Length: 373
Image 1 (cartoon, rainbow, N blue to C red):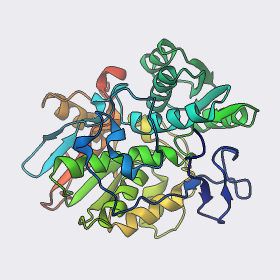
Image 2: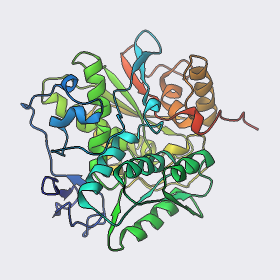
Image 3: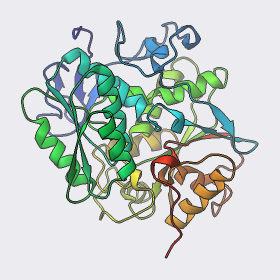
Image 4: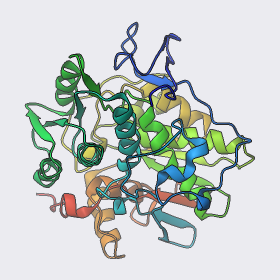
């Protein structure tokens, strides 16, 4: 049933559109959509009574009715890294990354819309998630990836039955190719950046922390930021839970020092970010030179009383090894937050506060970061 799909609204110019017929971006400004949806804070929120998937938060989600698409995603554990810092193990999701949270939402939306095919662009983890959930939904899927994408990730996409199109150039070139395909008839663009349903999937990350901590949130939530989908989802959940009387945390955003347009803009006091060169970095999953939702990301961090931190490849490499020696083998991008606030960080940005850091992707997808030459 498609009648239950909340519509789109553009945060920049107020344009509204029906999710069943809308183009993949705002037709006036070309920007990403937000969702015309705010959950009722008085609605019963009892995840323990729900299914073993992120659909357990149904009263806070924008989709209603029978949920056909799931791989029992979510409900990932919290484990202590220190006395006051816990890690949330999202690399234990079905496709080994947090991107499953948004992918299951978009796959369910696509299933209800019934397109001829689904297209996506990705540097790896989002593509593997879309491939898996489209397979689960019985949908044809094509993923555009930049050259140099991990062979293990593209192999996983193909194993799920997706067509993988390698695009010469960097991450932005892959996005442009996908958007050209998205303009064709019968295509649903499963964009984890432009489609707001993805953000309402990633917000379950914070709902799960709230549930695991007995109805509370830590003082700080640390989030890696490239396109900002986890941070913006977290910000949505923080606002929604605040309406239920939950004390909001500070949000600390982490970028790679090699590609840090948002951190630069934040510390310059700017409302938007200027594009930066696409330079190589171990934290490839957050190496986004021109995030389309930059204004929203910067505003969300400021509203949460947070800040931006940057980490070097050397710090990421050290953090990945430190986590591995604690029994947690994650990909380099997933080690970025621990690099920023853990024992290898140059100072103590947490200042003794309680915090949760995400471990977003499995090391099995990339292997151990090679030592610097």
